Length: 437
Image (cartoon, rainbow, N blue to C red; front, side):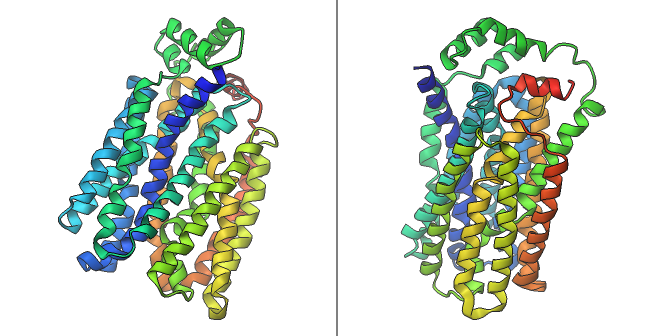
């Protein structure tokens, strides 16, 4: 029964990932029709694709200010309302500038949930299930991307159907809103607010641990003697290097170039029909979704670092394959193979593991603010890659662009080897003690 409670809580919180993934994926197909509907210049197309990342930066900053005050649950409720209203704003946008504002507003919700949801999932889980539970968020992201690709394909017959594509996210957002209303907040947040009775109640509902009082005392101990300033604390330097570093690696290795621009990549490597291109993206999205189950199965068994090694090596090889497809026109299907291998490698490694790590390495007292800064960095990198990628394609070509991604993957393996700790099988409090907080 307690496992059932845990997974019910996790399900509704994970819907935030579905919404985030939907927002990422839906624009890749909708942009093909929005460009024609509003006669967009390349500049405005780039702004429309990138504005959600800009909004996400704002959302992540706001999140750091509210999540420790209002709670993890209420923060997710706020994001659900933004997702619903932003989706409706997209549908009723009368011009490109209203649409950009609507997408920016939606981006705020993405920025909020990108660490509110993993943080919520991390703090309701015990050490033996935490990897699997937090990985549900990444699974939901991949399902959201797949869902968006299906919606794009289904409504690809009419140029004006981009409104339906962009607004479809309101449905899962409403389900998340209703579900989170009945969820409790996390026991660690209640302890942070000195509500020990509520924390005990939630721990009793969610964990098989019979020594609830000892668990509460262990969590309380991590909040004591924490008077040092966050910005200058040497003890927080390594967690920030890990957090910012893994966020850079997750984005700079090229994932959003493929998620946002997959149709563009396929069209530049020899495919012509929008309808065919959107069908191919469904195939890519399905692989992304299915391979995340591999990460969920392995992350608490073989650990975080082995998955990162495997994934980064596979991403490096696949980036080389995509590079070749740009210069050998007769090998256009190599682009599909390369993208598929890339997605397989990413979805079983960096996708879930990066978010899991930043939910683990920061101390409880500073976790909200610290994770917010890491997510802000993530979306800054996201905005940069999303904006620069089409420029690189135009100026140096796809071959050199994806070769750059391949080199970054190799360098990232060195970072993981030397900097990233293995957190498998350790409670959040044990991790704090290892960092000597």
